[in-house]
Length: 514
Image (cartoon, rainbow, N blue to C red; front, top):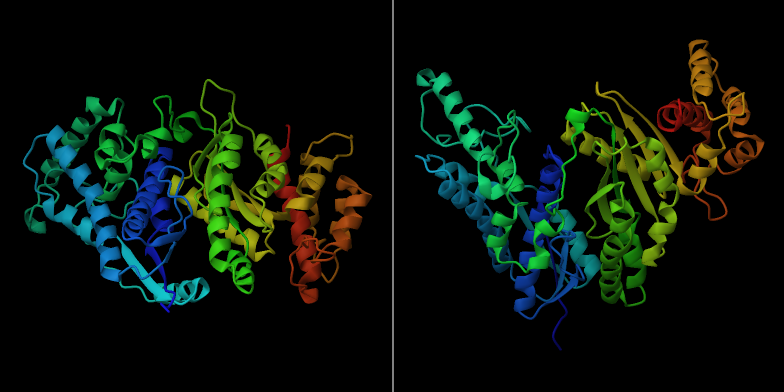
């Protein structure tokens, strides 16, 4: 009898690759590239008669989970070669297209080779069960072997982390003999010509932008003229997600706040391990993957795309999206985002699986770089998980970089925020905000007591909500605790005070009608 073998494959960096994106279009490009690389591996495995357990459906546009589980012994060298070839196809396609469109004496071949050969780490493991192979893969990922790419000259205006791509970026030069003026002029000339390329149909880069090689690839791959060279089916091209009518969000120009959310299913590993006890791990993973892909396509995306914003990716139980609205449409309000989140638990349950979800939401000022917003979004999601899961972390990120956060379980979110009433019976959060400021200045929340905070909470949110808060501080009767799921009596007073203070401050910025 042939022994059952499972192969698990993933690659890195994923989160860092996504976060180094300045524009919404770049985010789509990042998501597409990650999905395309996973797609190439899955397709090669199936061509060798291996069964891809997860992802259940390979969809480049929607987003494909980068952890791949295969039933069968897919050889490491073959899998790695397929992955590297797919990435090389992307880099070569972009490099050759630019060189054909903008004639010149290019001296950047070595730099493109470096990015082709050293952009990714590839991880591979095999085991006798899905749980076994996933555990082995995680162990392997802890031992990284990544080669960094050094450069000379100016760094990208987007990330500041890599060299500016231009005609002569690979020229061997003695630092003492560099002509900075001539080099700057050459860079400006290159990007002026890029902006004027008609096949792109619009301004490819802003006047202030000077991109690195990976940033060029992310940007270019979202255009039909480039993506179609990958010979994917038409419904797998990124242009499906970015149609002719697509408008990038203009955060700086219009000085508008935007809302970003990132979510992830809770304890998925445990959920699948529990299924393994009944000998249905493979089928459960397959059905789970299929259900989550369908949920992203049929439920999440339509709910966001109807005038609120766009989903960047939803290829599994993790997802990323943005709420925004450009002029001449009316400015998006935080209350609109909150109303969407009030209905999110019902939306989440549409996939039919008994798992909860944690989400980080960031209401970001227009002056905060997008890469910083994405990092805060990821941190907010982690905060939701570390504070008990099955909840949302609402974070406000100001232009100066300061931020504040309040975390609340889904079941209590709407009840609290919509029950607020000031001393005049209105929803003016200025009153509680000012009361908190005065009480903090008088050190009223100090000491081993939370009565001041609870009394204030009762004044503005009602007696019933106070009773609910005190009854459900921690997990009880199958209901997620407001403060979390691990009772910490020695910190309870402090945590109650902090929760109410943060509610007042975050609510003032998100819920005020003034």
